[in-house]
Length: 300
Image (cartoon, rainbow, N blue to C red; front, side, top):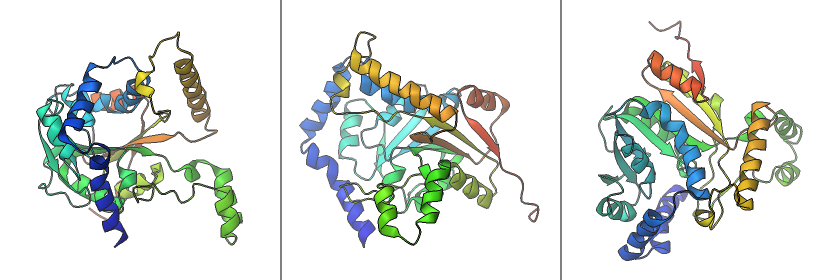
């Protein structure tokens, strides 16, 4: 089946680029000794900023899904919370444990997790959901093993936030060739074999309503400026390349705030338990929009 081939390709990808344990170890050592004030780290911290309201309460138990290198779990551990890193392939994660990047790891298929119900307080899936052949299976599995909430940080589907694109889609519904020519990334695939599955706010609102959950929260970010060599560019006001990237991000943030364009990435939190007042305050202050899901009037 096609999705089985996609799994296999993902499983092999890291070993193709880092074939030996030593090459993996060298990668971690290079990152450890690099200056942290670089564009790559700066962009990664934009993603991690979405977690801060939930990391404020210490000693919570997190599961990271699709955390190939362990860096998501590493960030959570640095906040005095607990984290288990998982990925389809743990060749890299096993080295991460040896190098002290993470404390524990496991090989897991996000679409069929082996953990018992509500094993973890939170589950994080960052920049991996769009790789899954069956993402809906994965989100239900993540909700199953989470006690409090699931956090999904992924590329946003533009059509729900761009009326003009939706209009073009409707007008050209019978002219698929022309529609695909205008909307070139309508069906995006990555070389490793997966369809790029982008998310939307409405999608997770419906999911939460169907399951009788209490709340979802959304934050829009624009962190997609990574390029090869970004780790060697300093985040200095004297560096023109960094200043240009920061300016582009500021412009995008303004356009998103004015609702002219959708954000590049959507951070979504699907709550199984209603957050307390302190957490709600932290979420709002960090830029999240909270959506209360009404109670189904036909179910007691």
